[in-house]
Each structure stands twice: as C-alpha cells, then as structure tokens.
Length: 244
Image (cartoon, rainbow, N blue to C red; front, top):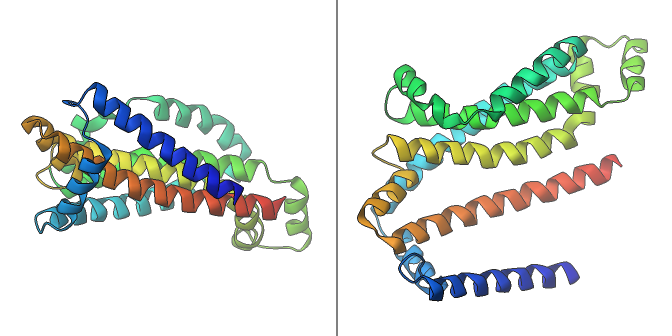
C-alpha cells in the first residue's frame, strides 16, 4: 500500500507539473485532458493503426535481433576474458558515438523503408545488451566454472546450466535498457526517412504545428514504454532478489 500510494502521488505531481507548464506555455503544450482526448480519438481512427503496426513490426524485429546479437556477443566475450578485456573499450567507444551520424550509411546500405528502421533500432539496443551480458558472465564466481569442469560438462552444457542461470539477472537488466534504446532507435529512424510509423506521425505533426497530435502520440508511446519498463523492472528485482 505504501508503494501504491507513492506511485499515485508521483503521478498526481507529474500531472500537476504538466498542467502548470501548459498554463505557462499553452502554444507549446496541450493540457492533460486535451492530450488524453486527442489520444483516444487517434486510437479510434482507422488511419492511426497502420502507422502503429508499422512501428510495432519494426520494433519487434529490431528488438529480437538486438537480443540475439547482444547475447551472442556478450556471452562469447564473457567466456573469453582476454577477448572481453580487448573488446569492452571498443564497445563502449562505439556506444558513445551519436548513432544519428551512422544514419546516412544505413540508408546507403538498406535504403528507405522497414529494413533501415530495423537496422537503426538494432544498433541502438545491441551494444547495451552485449555489455551487460559480458559483465554478467565475467562477474560469475570461479567456483561455478570449476564445478562444471569437475563434472566434465561440455561448453554448451556449461553455457546452458551454469552461465545462463547465473547471469540471467544482469542479462534482464541489459534487456530493460536495450528495450528502451531499441524503441528510440526505431522512432528516430522513422523521423528521418519514412512514410509510415509513429515517428513519421510526430514529424508530420511538427511540420503542421499540430501540438495536440504531437502530445497525444508521445503520450501513447510513453504509456507503452513505461508499462514494458515497469514489467521488466519487476522481473529484474525478482531475479536479483532470488539470486541474493
């Protein structure tokens, strides 16, 4: 009940700040009531759903590729300490680069459309997942690997029965970060060069100075992102508590 009360108070404070900002700059922000009304009308509009499905399709494919690629890189490097020491600063340097500078290259390679959005979302999410997975394996106690060698487990058996269960809490933490960044990458990709998607709707509304549409689209995206992040955060806490 205490946690629920804190959540309610935080939401009320956020709504109060939002309404105060609307009163201070009504030309730049719509009120919470007006934004919710516009969002509801968009959900009931047949023209909205093709854009939402386009973004959802690109995001799910990009997230799947980021998870598979990130786990493959992270687990592979984590099991090779020398490779991890060499690759970690390289991955961190690549991750620190503004990804938008890579967009012209992505357009040249993949062209306009869905593949470019998928690629842009994947490069946003793959490195955080790889770093979390790599450090999760590196932080496992050596006694686990010694036990696996004593039991004469193969490399695949060690990975499935020792590494994955032990590293799972940190991997889920990486997935939580990768989820948000992959969604951000897909939306940025849609903003730059796309004819469909929620990012395209936002850019089109910016061009028309349609503030209610901008706010409503951002609100819908925020609801989806916060809900998924809260679910992953709950799972993250459960796994860390169980591991402790």
